[in-house]
Image 1 (cartoon, rainbow, N blue to C red):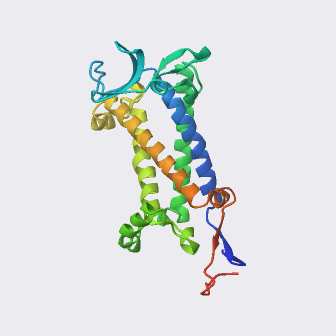
Image 2: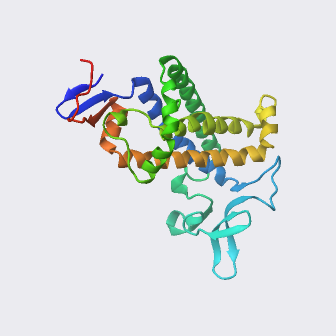
Image 3: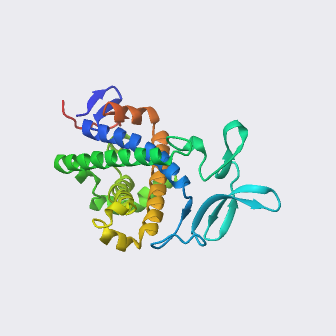
Length: 280
């Protein structure tokens, strides 16, 4: 419970299961992203449908010879091309030599062109993430934490104002900062039950061994290549969420937020003009 400390209070915001799940997820997502990029490098093309149409990928990250400047890295999206030499498609390799690969070697795990090991890392941490998320959701459901993520009527009434405040980089302060706002609730629910579900099911659909078990999902997604495309897009959505999440952590007080996710205790300033009720 909150304890009075001069003009500040400390609030036990994140319980231990929440903190453990957060850090395990952070490590898993980091390794899954970089090992996933290594797997993608083996065939840096995405398609819609059940089979690879090598002549018409909707997304391609590769290197091509051009008459003007020779070989250059390119990202092609639905026929539109963008030169990305030095970043994507063609980047610096060992000894300063150009390396033709979708994503540079420094951005992949375990590095180099070790596809089989990249797949092993990816599958291991994928199952670790699934187990971690499952345990967390069971705890969240029984502890009441999950109910805190469900928007209330008051949340919906203040939705527009919350959007305006975030666009103006105006964030809740004081006791209000100890609770999830409506945008946080919606973001977390979308990531857990939306992107999370897509990541897991499309990942399973890409394995031929799962054809019998995942046949209905495979049909729903439109085939294995479509499942691979959706998997890539869902992973991109997770990356976007992490970027926004880290930005919000920084602008609302990185040290305080980091402390709360390590120790559980969040510190906030009280309004000295009115008396707040608290338990001893």
